Length: 338
Image (cartoon, rainbow, N blue to C red; front, side, top):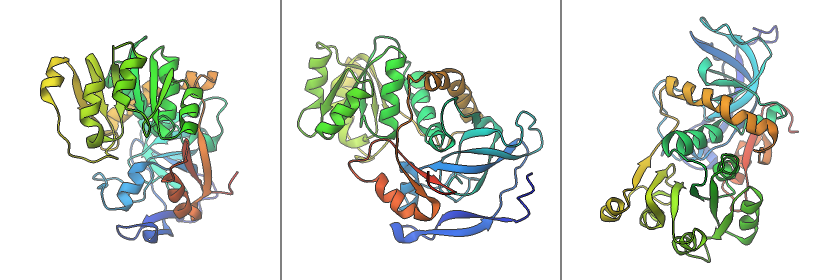
């Protein structure tokens, strides 16, 4: 432990109830103590994710044993290691996938969910990588088995997940297509690696996907909308297609056309990252470090930071996250904003 930690408290964001920005507060909390198999990270920056806002609204229960402090990803330096952890040196720059606790000056996390910062990425920008990288790799590669030449429809091509997914898919040799909500976002999706992009406010994505693929359809769809797009997503699938639902921005209950799913020999699946056991998360992050970080280092995947806010400006940061013109990640920093 560094000599600086003579104090026993840290600044952290808390939710004083369920609601809007009025429930946000920055308070002094007890410093976490790393348990067996855990490391204590001195946080440089934390990424904001939709789950944080769902938790604030009272719609995302904190997993058992996780910190009530929001925040599912951070970057920083190793401050202390718990029993049984011998592979991290003090001061090593790292980023980590969390079950909670990221909006703070320090966080304790299972060592398996901690990985080195990719070469060439700043500590601040690195905070926006763990959640999107783990989400995209686990869903597109592990769950859907994306292969070279597969047509993949990514809903929301310029969001935090979408902007990473398009770059990853292109690097893997797949053929990504994005939906986006404006002409500017369509252009941005193409810049991120989409072979085509569909303005969902002006075009029917099912018809356009069939047209783009010469009648084939989508081999894989990565969906953040849920109920609103369920029937249309099934219609857009190719024979043997896989629909992976990872978000419910368009509602949680929809009608699944089972006959069409059967007729296409399709697979419809849904996943959540946060509640998974630490062993699963460690496995995902190990593969991310092995297979995805080299793509980041080479420049095939670039970090997409939209804006950076100080911890005390968390309300403004979460407001920015919800603005329609956002492209990429919103980050909180514990020190001065870059």
